[in-house]
Length: 309
Image (cartoon, rainbow, N blue to C red):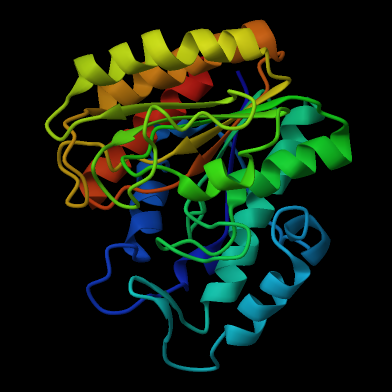
């Protein structure tokens, strides 16, 4: 399997203030883990900037321009209680969304088998017109819309295993039968969405909430019983993964007890469905993960599984 790693140095210039968990060291931890000899054959490329046109398939032009205008020349601008912009944020956010788009292009063109986009800020909390939860542009949604508009992909599935529910992704695709969104996450926990009863206008939203303290067995059962059969039935042309690693037992922002072996297992199961249903076309995007050691180990396990196919 040829796996592509997409990243950019600008994504480490995004700051949200002293002590904030979504910090540049996250990306450095991932980068260092993927410098190991085991990843010698990992293809690597640099994330381009997303264009306004690409972002505007999900976010209105007014919203994109408002984010651009908010970008500070110095210091921090607070957009909500836990989401702030520094002088490096806008470039990082454009590269993060652009990296997702670039990975779609490479995978759909069969230049690589699959891809992992290691960028920040994350995206799954960003709604069409609202930045929140450390997120500015919804990278997974932008990638899905790009695949449909630029490549004629009809059906896209997004599977999210971040400890927090991807309220933004769910909201954006709530009434769209061409995009399936499926999530395992802890409840109750920020942002408060993701109940099993939230199924979208066409039944294409699948939520499998977990409880604080749940570990790998509950996570695997949720995927096996609630999500993977529905994913098979949806038969997507492309699979996007919102890969948050904050459900790890070491993570300070969640209360689940997953290990890196659980993330590797989930990756293998998703790859198997991608192979059967969409010619192996899978693009994974980094979301959360705030304990640096756990993040590094989980990202390495995830990418190892992608490379093995």
